[in-house]
Image (cartoon, rainbow, N blue to C red; front, side):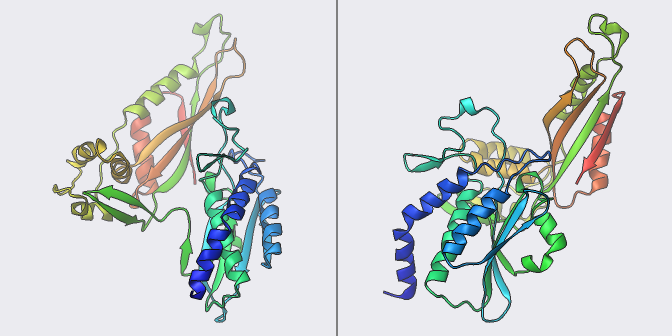
Length: 352
């Protein structure tokens, strides 16, 4: 048996330990609402640091803000260079209604071979696998030519301002590797009787829009004395719902649709028809094509009103925006101006 085969066998033998590690990480709530104080990633980092220490691997926790920890661990190589990053994140999205969960969201219950809990898939499962890989390499005394670094960041679920964005700005040398393994980068697509792996070569841009809708307050018993911002908001929402984004087929995936037995040459005129043909047999691929062929503007949160008997004077609508690689800030502003044209009392700002 080769050394590699022996390590693979060790990994099989460590299956129970790997499961227990992921369960432990899921049971540490690290919910990121996007509004400070939030995240609580440092307790997860401390658990990981203790776990790595028992495996003989040193680590450091870098906090971008109180309790917003980022953990970094290294196995050095003989060249003195960093060759590969294991990238992940420790924060998870909020739980909206725990009563709708079959199992409590932070219980990490095992049912029919799956771990159930917030973060089990995104992204503490990947993080657990990366940690176990480092442990096996370290305990087998594997000598690496170029170094391996695990970096698990905070705040991925809200843009990375306290995580990889902060690390890139303050500790760029810790991220300078030619290759990285992370949760993205591609996905398998089953089509035309075969399995094809689509490799991601870029990302859609992510921005957040705050749309402030203003009216005039009055007592709710005499609403005609005011201007209800909610009614103006309804106009905004109707405009966004009816918005037809420009169709675009310039991303590289559309050059290779023949791989998926799609004979039509895609264009902005026929891409929706191509997507419709895929939706029944391959809905996942159809969804990917839809996302890559247009910008999206999605309302996600509403905040406003001060009392049940008062006509609201101001409402704030938050929208998630995903732009295609070639679409600039000016393009987004032009589209927003068109959407909101003619609705009084409306202003917006863009958060990068």
